[in-house]
Length: 187
Image (cartoon, rainbow, N blue to C red; front, side, top):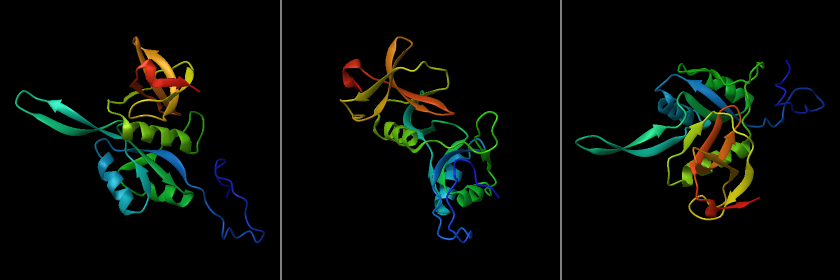
């Protein structure tokens, strides 16, 4: 009965584990394709904190325009859970497993600061966020000083001749948005 290496806590002297606060961590849960919204709703009803990255887009057909929600990372729902809640998530029939790092057997923990930056980018961006799992060289650390994303910290990079701000999410790659160079300052 060993705790995951990322979740070790000191036990009280009596060894019962009573009164030990279990930390919550972010994990990426794999779900059945097209079941992401349904799972997010079910998790919320269970009282489990979750995050489904969606973005509104306008789709143009020959006869009409319609605003739709596009799931940014298909088949993934992020959950912030304790070890006990982590097991409860797997009881849902459309949830298959958690993301693990290559060569490891325990679910990979996504750092809180990466999730907060990613959520901030989604909440305040006026443009479409693009996900990429292509390897990027570490770029210059910058902070956005103008526009809707003021305060966002990330890396400045150039992709396809366009300047972009990248927020890395370990294991998933990075989220990027086009940004004028005058809107950022070096950290």
